[in-house]
Amino acid sequence: MAWSAPTRISSDAEVRSLAASSLVKLFDSLYEGAVVIDQEGRITWINDKYKALIGWNGSEQIEGRLIEEVLPNSRLRNVMETGQADLLDVLTLGRRQMVVSRIPLHGEAGNIIGALGVILFDRLQALKPIVSKFQQMQSDLAGVRKQLAEGRHAKYRFSQFVGASRLALETKEQARRAAEREGAVLLLGETGTGKELLAHAIHAASRRAEGPLVSLNAAAIPEALLEAELFGVEPGAYTGAGQKKRMGKFQLADGGTLFLDEVGDMPLSLQPKLLRVLQEGELESLGGNQLRAVNVRVIAATSRDLKAMIEAGSFRADLYYRLNVLPIRLPPLRERREDIPVLCETLLELIAEQGGEASCTLSADGLARLAGYEWSGNVRELRNVLEQAVAQSANRRLTSADFPMLPEVVTAPGVSQVSSNQAMAPVRPLREAVAAAERVEILRALEATGWVKMATAKVLGISRAKLYEKLGALGISSENQDTSGDV
Picture 1: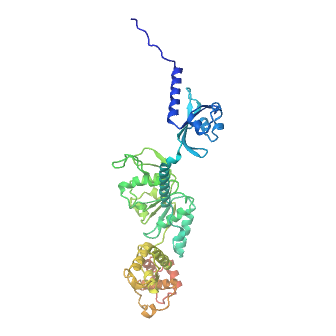
Picture 2: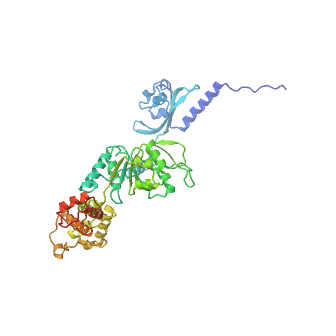
Picture 3: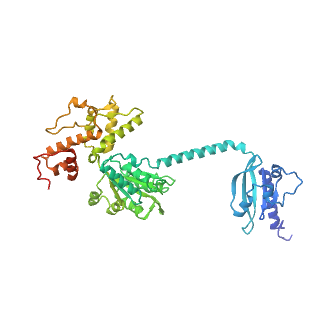
């Protein structure tokens, strides 16, 4: 028997026709409703379920009519014209709501020839548990985002930098001017002088106030982890890095401000990378090979002598000059002792508010003892001492005896001690009490240095001009003072 080629069952057109017919049957059986429109927006096919949903009476012809005539709220024409699928939407028909999907239909040449709409579910009420769970998840996510946003905004304002002394007012004025500019800010000052508070206040008063404020303490993070914290980590960058990308502080602060505390503790190996971000506005994540642009203003702070570190080779000079665009020196508390009364009042109110109790006050001798101390820890140490006194004292009025952690104020020769009768005298205004305490300390220093002004100023930690100003204000003079050191 001779071999013959297999008989062709059908043409390509017949195959496509059979496939289309099968799809129509599939849509008819799977979905609660299905409709197809052509390029002109006219209905070419609609199944009986859909007809029943729209209340078709069976006598009028639906095929060939514009989709909007049959379904006024339909977005099928928009899907066809844009070519963008609308996979999940809610369609309202009368009083009923349905979950629908709409997809564009393409011809052999890739052009759009129509659109298909199907009703995935016609009883939205039955989906209420799923919808409720989704809404709860959305609400929880919004709450977390709000907490993150609040955590990355300024907590302090300039009004919270307490002080009416000349130095305090000058410092705040410098900070306000810095807030109006975009350059890097370098806050210089001893521990506890309020560098973090001022950084927050500058951000809050700047044009970036609506952006994030992200903080990082370079001294609090191990050197091996600091690069990842600053610049982010790519998946698998190192053992234990994980398979998810982690953003660094610079990326989190994009559009806002990065407060880089204790920048003097920045490892020398990381300083070039920090310099690049400041100069070029771009960074490279740890383990990455692509540069990413960031728009971040840096406010740096340090209690260390950066110039001395540059000379010692532990801090880069080019990084210092890049950070030192708007330098602000925060004066230590011993240089603005006249602010101690108002600081004590403010801190005692804060301590009482946090403890939920009435605020304590200070007696004259208690304030004099505080005013006579050197405060190496500055305002932070002052608050710590006040908290200790409040916690340990049974009195609402704190006296000198409530501060055993501080050394006694010793008067200079010829200056009478405060008697018990004087301690019971009417309370003076705080500024007068501070002036009295200053007078005691200045007299002690003068006696100790033989009334040599230059040496006295050095002992007190103030300039000679400031000493003369205080001597005049306090009415201190001596006929036998030695002027040999005043040149």
